[in-house]
Length: 238
Image (cartoon, rainbow, N blue to C red; front, top):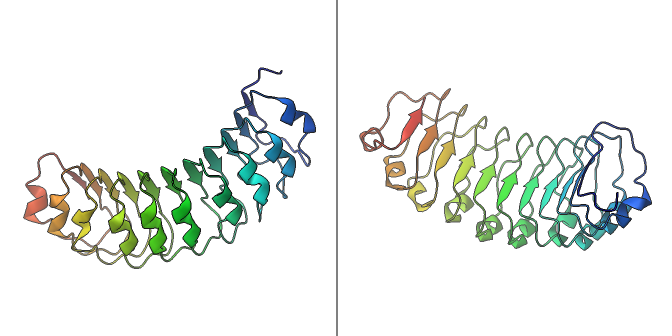
C-alpha cells in the first residue's frame, strides 16, 4: 500500500478519514465524493503528497485553513455541496490550477480569487452568481472559465481583461447583450452563449483571430453579422 498513488472511495460512507492515509507518502489523487462526510476531515490536510482532491456531494459548508498545507495540490473538486460562498481557505492553496465548485449556492466570487496566480481552469456552474470582481482579471494563466446556469444579466467587464482565456461558457444565464469591445479577449477560441436573451452579436467578434466556435442556440437572434459569416474558419451554431 505504501506505493499507492490513486485512491477512490466514491459513494462509500466514511464519517472519519483513517489516519493511516497520511502515511501513504506517494498518494497523489484522492476521491472522496459522496461519502457522507458532512464536515471536512482535517486529517486530509496531513496527506502532503496530494495533487488532486475531490470531496464533492458531501454536504460540506466550510473548509479549514489548514488546506493550505497541501502545498502540492493542483486540482480541487468541491462540487455539489452546501457552500454559500467560496471558502477562503482555498486562497491558501497557492499552486492550485483547477478549481471546480459547481452546483452549490454561491452568490458571489470573492476578491481574493485574483490572488490564485496558478489557476488555469475555473468551473462555477449551477450557482447564484450575478457578477464578478475586477480582481479576477489578474488571473493571467486562466484558460477556461465555466459560468453556466448562474444569474448573469450583463456580460462581466472584468472578463475583457483576461488576455489568455481560451474557452468561456456563459450558457443558461440572462444575458441581453455582448460588449462591443469583446475583441479585447484576443486568445478566445470557444464562446458558449446558448440559452440567453441575446438579440444580436457584435461584429467585433470577427476581430478575435483565435475564435473558432460560437454557440448561440436558443437566443432570439435573427441574423448573423456579415463580418462573422465571412469568417470561413469560424463555426457559429444557432
